Image (tube, rainbow, N blue to C red):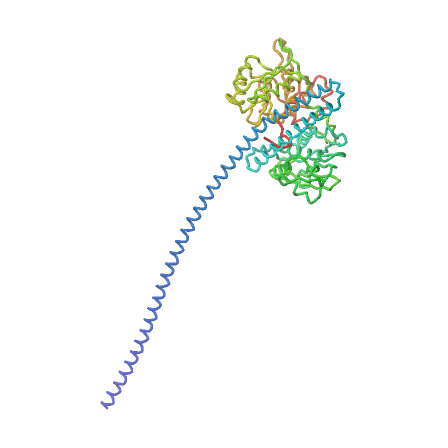
Length: 575
């Protein structure tokens, strides 16, 4: 039994040993697998670290590239800003250098033309060749004037568009009465219709129109451009301005003509820069102009958050439409202005601003003395000749310092003042005039290639090349206002004088108003003052002509009306 037991014990031990060996092998296999897994994990970790390191390197490189790009972009923006400044300076300089000689060219061409007509009228020319040559000279002078005016419009349009696109315009947004804007634009465009008796100019403005928030001067500029285009292409029929309130309370303003019209396909491209519609197949049919007017109009209207578009048909006419959003103040109080639906005779508008020539007798002075100040001798010579021919006495100065000395010695009745001059510029000279008790009441008309109504202390501001008709009207108006209001104290005469205004009195008033010799009257109070029997002088700024009932005032012999000129934009633009 003992032997059998020993064998059994040996077998059991062998089986146990085999089991241990099997477990050992399994454990070794598991250890090997775990080791391999650890190696794989470690390898993956290393790879991830390497990948993260590569990504970090790429991020750093990208960041540096972005920084370089931003630096390049900032440098490009700086260069663009500098180029924009240089462009603006260049345009300003070129415009000044062009406008000043243009004043002389246009002015002397007009003077020579008038002198030639006067001389030829006195001569009995029987030689047909001499007569034909004289007519050719007169025609050439007219061409010089026309081309000078065309170049002036081009300069104004280019400057205007450049200012708008560069954002350098100082917009004066305000709630505006569209009737006032329409009448001001029609008055400024009246000359375009003067030679077209077959064209009827009219407007229709219903009451209770929504107010619109616009820059009034720029809105007038838009309407002037549309009216001038209508006059250019309408030879008979009518040109009509209408305003209406739409369902959404927007204002719809239209200018419709019965002119040549154009193809509907051109309705969009006419608002592109330098694009014009040719009404024919020859160069003679090419319209005169810069091709910038409607592009400027679109920029202005879009700045007002509005729309401008055109519809037209060849041989039928054109309808230009403007839609403008209303302001918070929905409707204007039109207590002084009923519904307007009139046909305007051009002469009626022009007569609103006409003033008779003033002859002032003061000691030995029989004619008004005007001091012309400009550093360009040709401009001085032209303006002096023009004023002498128009019944004034003209003396000249070439800089502000000389102007102050001459004014103290001669005490002129009015001064025309250039701005950019050597020794002493015009702004400094005007400041001297306003500080000196002997000179402060002398009206000053700024005549400059770079006019700025806001920055000038003048009583009126006109741009070069100067419109001589407007210059003479301004001079006569200012002189007449001086004669009407500044009564010599020795005579002990008091003439009541009121100046119409909207709410707050404007800052750009003539000296006799600034010195307290006239009082301001709000439009809402004006009707009451008149009904209470006011007697005296009423000064009406041109921008308020649409609010005044002239039919009643003209019948009141105790009321004298004076129109005070305001500086409005030219058809081509604003310098």
